[in-house]
Length: 173
Picture: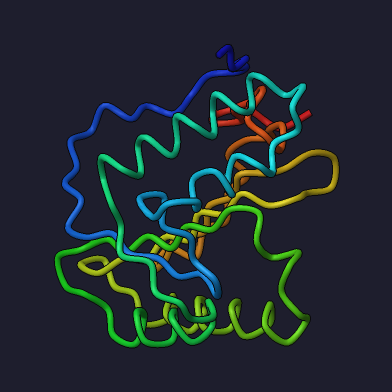
């Protein structure tokens, strides 16, 4: 499996500790449940061998490092999860290719909830919103940070992970 990386990646040599991980989906699949892993791989076209390898690799990673996934909408889940900042912890909200499947109202609620939590963020309890979604030209990896209020375009990428171009320290073309 070959992924073409372009540009200079961000310096990620800082040590970090993950306190917890959790997620939500209105109809979550469990790759340890018979049939669910097969269902996930069935969405990959037969001629997309590299994509199939990435998906099966992700399934193996999910099996080794399980995450609690609540069966609830993103808006409801985030309203609870982001109700109060957590001192001493940087909270990261990560989403990948989901906004296009939400209604206009659900997208608006998601943004309002995250931005409201951002206004409550402090240097001791920062909030980051990392998202990989369709952009103007390609799929974009964007990061919003609070309490700074910064919004960064980190990279453009192929929607299925074939390539990514980092923009850290450079202006996107």
